[in-house]
Image (cartoon, rainbow, N blue to C red; front, side, top):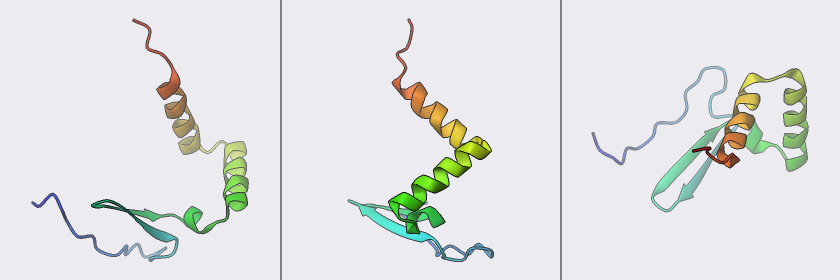
Length: 75
């Protein structure tokens, strides 16, 4: 298998290519399949606040991962 593989378009039946955005960083292509990439900064902020208040477990896990990155290891 090649380290460089072409990607097929997103075919999820419910979303299709809606909310897809592609970024290139050198030889790397990053494809994001999320309606968040189409929102303004203010819309994203509102979305995150609402999801946080609802207790979205994925956001809580992401926040914990970030906090863990800034904690010093105790040796």
